[in-house]
Image (cartoon, rainbow, N blue to C red; front, side, top):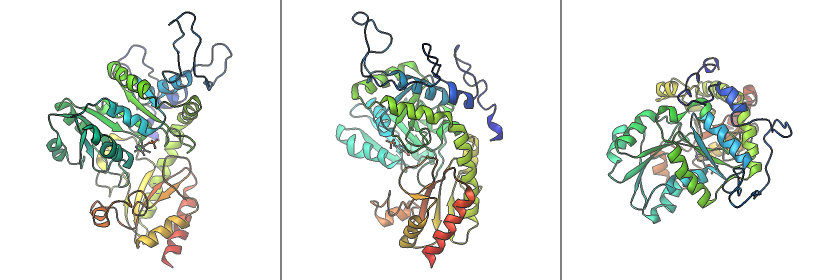
Length: 402
Ligand SMILES: *Cc1c(COP(=O)(O)O)cnc(C)c1O
């Protein structure tokens, strides 16, 4: 990507010891030093639960690996740097991270969240936290008047996702953070779809960034993890208390895998973005496709905002195959380069049909009203050759329509 080379210059200059190297360099080096004893270049997998103390309470920074583990520490420092924050906390899953944000709230508090947030986020807010008297209002977060109307005296958190799943709506992080702050609420942004390579919500005024490390940051569909990044030591302390108290922390092997993944995040994302853009244009011109949802297309209603807020448009896209639910199911079953599976963000392309899979529980009328048509297909565009992807779609479309 041509405009990346200096996008981060100066951003981190406020703090004395800030690492002002460019993103690609920090992706590989931030938080990591060769081992002083052995010279080992890579952060070791510290498979270890406890640490020797020289006298009671006298230790070298580590006591017990739920509280802190050196492999995890390096990953947390790496992620803090990439998200333009001062502190990061890692978790055993993205949901573990999201849960920890909700731990900051109290019974009687109120949350405002997007009406198209990740299914697991919707589930934890409604099916877990409502019983603790934490109420959530779900609104269209692209409609700022609706968000303002939803705010109450008790609102303590505005939860934002952008781009969203599966229609790739783009939300204005700065505007939503302002609405949250006017009401003395925190603004948390789930940055999983964009990754910090394409979008850094803390720079737009968000208080907390959440990541499912399972997706692009891990990048190889081989581990589950989550992270929270903030630019505020006091808020980090509070999150750290719940991280340690609840205990949904990642093991050292998982931390190692994600640290391995972040080194190649920029080169992987460049290819994801390139392939997704080319595929989106090809699909948009295809006779069997009635609509393509990709923020990089000028036909996308939020294209201008996406161009402003993001450095490129990501690897996720959805499209409407012009056919029935069954024909859509045939397409996703017949593709071979695209594997039929949930999840996203790995090097391999994945495909799914929301109406028959992730969003099947929503009544059809409601689902259609939300724009989730029978033939809607969502893809996580991998880094295989884009011509093989096009050929794969063509044979799957032919099979569905024959
Ligand atoms: C996958 C995902 C999550 C949850 O992360 P897990 O690692 O599966 O727990 C949260 N938000 C978004 C946008 C996701 O895609």
